[in-house]
Length: 102
Image (cartoon, rainbow, N blue to C red; front, side):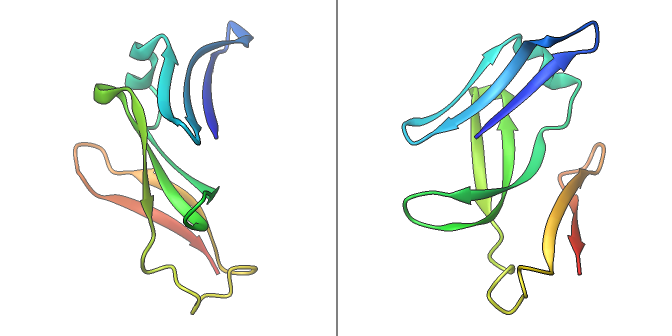
């Protein structure tokens, strides 16, 4: 997985990126950019131990991506029709709102 940030003045150039590979994760480029863009994303993860939607958090302080499984998002959901489509950060708060399309 890769999350990349591009400046409007030069959209072809990657200003910063967060990369997750089987070997681990790392942030590249201008790390200060992460202060201005969202740090939480929802994605589908297909790793060696589990496959499902998850929360990706760009951890700028430790220069990596952290994954969090949605334990509540079980097989009780019809995942073909009831999908997690986004996350919204609540400013100055540790909580966030997940957007679930049902």
